[in-house]
Length: 77
Image: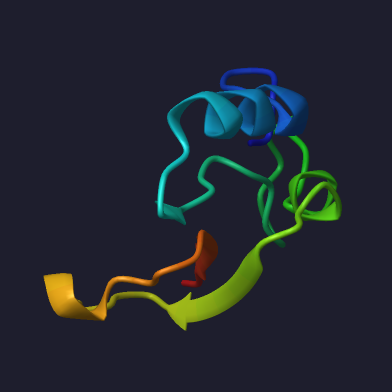
């Protein structure tokens, strides 16, 4: 969602509206210490109207545990 080399926040949201995923995992955005000319996660999350979960750096999930409503899962390093 950082733009430049990948979809920007607007493009990611348009894509989400088309495919309607149950879980969205944003990728390729600027984090502290990264010097690439890309955007951070804030513009993407500013458009958000779904629940946001910060899930750490890995997660195990079973089919029965999938959310009933759409969510955004943000992984951390």
